[in-house]
Length: 303
Image 1: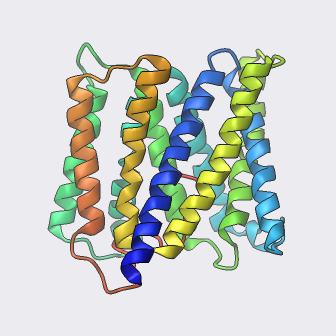
Image 2: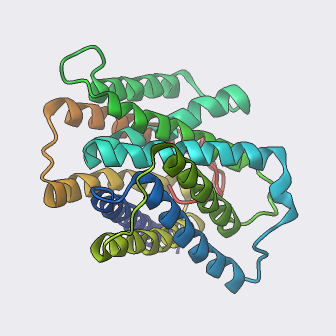
Image 3: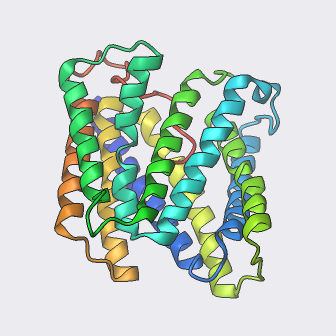
C-alpha cells in the first residue's frame, strides 16, 4: 500500500515539475515581446484567480486575518524577491541555466534551517551543501570570460524562494496551501506595476503572447495541485527528490523551444547541484511521517 502511494506520489511530482517547466517556457516565450512587469501583472492576476477558485471549492476564506502577521509580511517580501528574480532570469538567460541554479533552493533551506531553526544537520549534509554551491559557482563562472551578470538574477530568485520556504514553515498553520498560493501570486501584481512605473513600456499584448501567459498560469496552477497531491500522498523522503526532474524538462524544452545547448560547465554544475540536493534529502531517512532535515511537510506555493 505504501509502495503504491509512493509510486503515485512520485508520478504526480514528476508531472508537477513538467508543468512548472512548461510554465517557465511559456513565460520566457511571452517575455520576448511583453515587458517583464506586464507579464508579472497578468501572470499574478491569473494565478491568484486560479487559487481563489481552489480555495473557495474547499470552503476556505480568500482573505484570512492571519495574513496580518509579521511572518506573512516577511514571506511576502521573499515571494516578491523569488518571483521577480527568477522571472528576470528566465527572460535574460537560458532556461536551462536558470532552472539549474534554482535547484540549489533545498540546499539553502537545509543550511538556513540549521542556523535559524536549530535543526540538526550533520557534517555530511553540510559537505553536500558546500558541493552544491560549488556547482552554482561553476554555472555562474564568476571572473571568467563566460560570466553573465544576468545569471545573478537566478541566484536572487533562488535565495528568495528559499526564504519563502523557510517563512512558510513559520507561517500560521491555520492558513492552507491554497490561501498561501493566493497571497503569493497577489504580490506579483504590485511588483509588476512598480516595474512598469520604473521602466515604462506597457503595451497591449498580441494574442499569441497573451495566450502564452494564460497557458503559463493555468499550467502553473495545475502543477501546484499535482505538487500538493504528491506531498500528501507519498512519503516525503521518497517523493521530494523527484523535484529535480524539473531540470531535465527544462533542458529538453530549452533545446526544443529556444535552441539552447548547455555547455560542459553548466552540465557539471547541474550534476553537482542535483547530486548534493538528492543526498541531503534522502540520506539518513527519518521515521515514517517525519520530514527530512530542511524539508517542510507542507507544500510550498508553487516552486
